[in-house]
Image 1: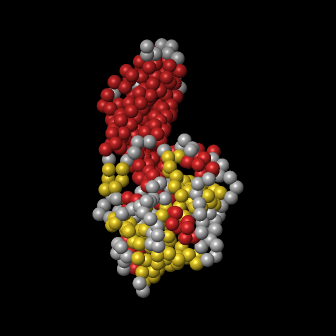
Image 2: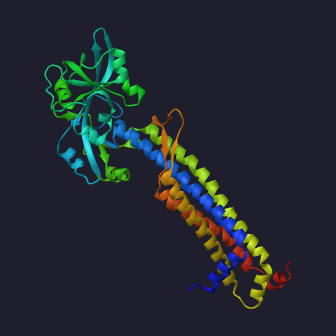
Image 3: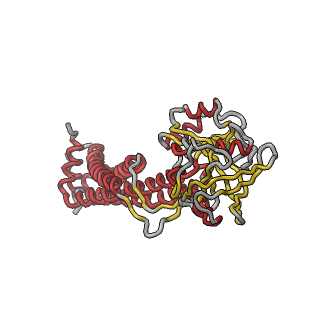
Length: 406
């Protein structure tokens, strides 16, 4: 059952229906804009993180100490030991895959160029990244194909154009092996890849990790264990609770992709300023409505005080009015904003935009706890705070002065 103060607050709302409806609409519009703005930003961030991590880096990596800052052939780890199996068995982890890398010279006929040759597990790589799906000509690496004298090799499309090679051509690769010898190998070009990253497509070569381990004299070794999670939000917990042991580091995507991470953080900081302005507008709307309501009912409040109504009851009545104004507007705004976020997909234009090194062609909004719960609660709380000053003014009225108010 509603209290007397609550009934007074509800009655006062309907006495000035037009003003109440306008205030509701203003709060609802502000809340909708906040929900949509946060949803579009967070949805875009999620897309960028997914594109970047699915493209190559994974959401986390296990590496040898110092490899991130100074990659070296000799800074390697076991590709499949008890620690790797323990990491793969963690409930947060969806899949992991090993990678081995080396720089060298790739040649075809009279043309040659420096490349980064990456050895991957042909089966497990697709569980972690989208690299197998980037093959545009030929086929992905066949794990069952015999190695022989010319094991299979994939090249970035830009790199293939530079070397002037086509599917079925033979290329020679020269680098240094871990034992100090010259690592030389002929490869058969079986596929071309197009990742969408111009730099990678112009310098990337991909082979089977087993073939590369044999070439570099690094049996059972890898430079990275690249992994993905069931939910990206579990990354911090994994990093905090998994002990990689001495000589190894477990790194999350913010460390692996510092440019993208810093771009997102800077954009979020700017977005908070805009959100603060929107919340301030909603606060002023409620405060103005409540102040006008108290001003117009000064004589009424004077009569109530003269008849013995406690000042505290007047405060509660005005606050209940602010409560229902804020609650109605916020709920309506959250509902509309949620529906918009579920349906919005905005093309960015004729050319993809680049943000933190990631190209994006369509922006999708997302409903998040922050945008759909936290910020609306802040707006609701701001509405109550905005109603507090008019409520205190009503409680401090002197009955004689209030009765003489015109």
